[in-house]
Length: 101
Image (cartoon, rainbow, N blue to C red):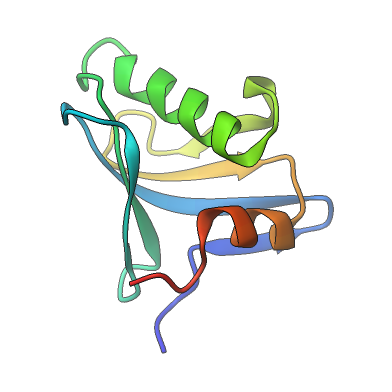
């Protein structure tokens, strides 16, 4: 079994994602168990923070939290990112579908 892309930290958790920018539709992709990351495809260009904004908007909507509850901790200019989500780990795992391959 590979690494989990969701790690709990009290009432918050962190998730590791690999972002694929400039696609037709923003959606969840596959889990890369070896990297411990969830692929997220975003319909925005990786230019001037557009893909980051779309990533935050999409995850906040998917998880039912405010945009302020989703924050990029690492990888602001990289496709590989770590985000802090102000929601319990169990909720995030359920709504993002941990273990989907």
